[in-house]
Structure formats: structure tokens, C-alpha cells
Image 1 (cartoon, rainbow, N blue to C red):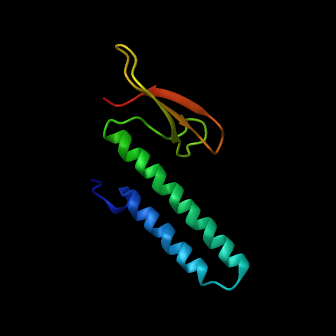
Image 2 (tube, rainbow, N blue to C red):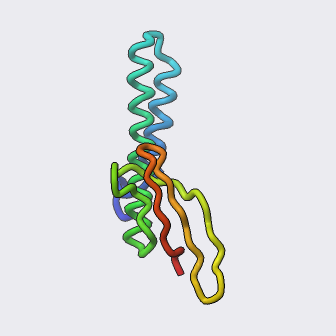
Length: 104
């Protein structure tokens, strides 16, 4: 469990939800648009924090080495013979993908 609020992905995703709720009440389209963009950035920050926390716990990094955005698990490749299961991650921001051994 993260020991600080900023290390908790839920904290950032909750902020994103609050920003979306604020945006829903805004009458000015420009302000609503900026507020929704901020909400998206809070979600990205939450995803990055989640990746960082997983990496600190010994899991694989799911942050794109090219653009530093969160990568999504695209495919799990079952273990074959004596080889471990593989995970393939894709970055939807820049199109990079990579495959790593699944955590033990």
C-alpha cells in the first residue's frame, strides 16, 4: 500500500472524476474542454503512479520507454515447455510495443 497520498493511483483517478463532475456543471464550452483535458491528465498520472508502484514491488514497468506514458497489457502468451509466460504491452500514445517475462 502506498505510504503517501501522491503515491496512490486512486488519489489521482479520484481527482479526475471530480474534474469531470465540475466540467459537467460548466456552461462555458472552453472551460469545460480545458477541465476535461485536466481530468484526462489526472488519469494519466494515476496510471503512471500505478506503474511506478508495481515496478517498486518487483513487477515489470508498464511505462513506455519511448514517451513515458502508461502501456496497456495487450496479450499474455502462455508458458511453453520450461519457458515462463510472456506479457506483451502496447503504448497507445506512440505505438511502441514490447514483450517481457511475466512476474513469477
